[in-house]
Length: 431
Image (tube, rainbow, N blue to C red; front, side):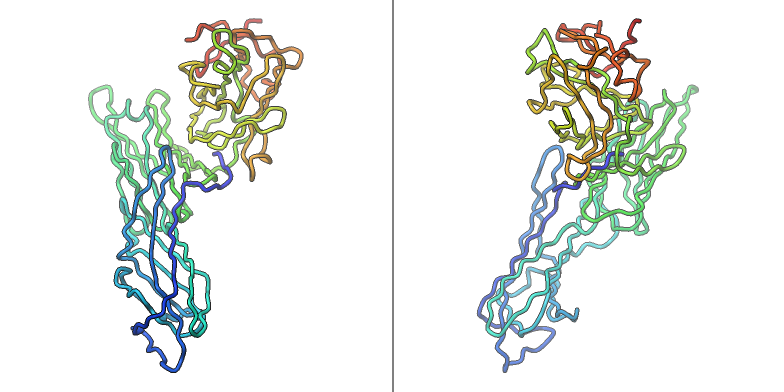
């Protein structure tokens, strides 16, 4: 549901450096004209694959089997090597205009651990006796898919698996499957099979489905499967990792909803604010709480937190907030065991008056639409020392939350000894 600006992402890069040398080689597709003064190329292929997620890791990819093709500017193949390892060290070429393509040899069938790479250089010219250096960048040509199961699914279902498929085949993600599946860029369908125990001891199951209608190259689609037998609802949430553009596709019994990418006004609420703790210093003990007031899951990656319209912090983790779920964001983990995200020193809550605003990222972190705002310094708001400000449980509305009359100081003791309910249900304020 949250759509944020594309960053760096989660990125894949291939660097190919073509260096000029001065020796000769026979062209397998076109005889060199000895009357021409050739240029010369030496091709070296180097590749790194970097996956940036919770923990960054670097995985080397063997490029020996990569196809390397030198083409004329009119797309005619001039020289081709089926395996990069077979490229001679020195390649003479006739003067002219060319570009270079590189491609890994994978087929298009979906499979685990099957990244396919493709790259094309800009058109370049080689003059007689010129030594030429040409950079070529390639990137992931297919897309990645992973599947995560919520704790509800793990706790309440006896068995579960998800089949992800397209017109070329399918990949089955078992309950404990953590590998990436790689898919060509045609529509992808998702079917999650969930088995559960009935009261008479028999097993029943249900299938919920969704789709990725327009998968994009180099993108990681992280599918979150969630279901609760207690709530009687099932859904699939799709997060696009590897970029700041995060889109969630909710799939439930009513069908598939593809959201426009922005968190709507009022879908997230600020429901509790601890700006003046007594048990800890402000630098350790400050926190505030947000609540998903929508009926869809929200990934808060790149959620912007402002004070007085000035950006103070941008959430840098993928955290999925389910409908009617609370999340406490703190200055430090010491603020409470209920803290689900630490914003550090970026944000300081003043003890007299302050304004906290949640906003979408937009294009640059500054111009995103507002989601909710609370100014706890205006008349009507209570004063909290050693106690959080608590939004009345019966006033969970973006407009009602801006009125001080709907707030009170907390009366429930939490783990530091101060009063509040970080990350858990709010109190009903007594009138």
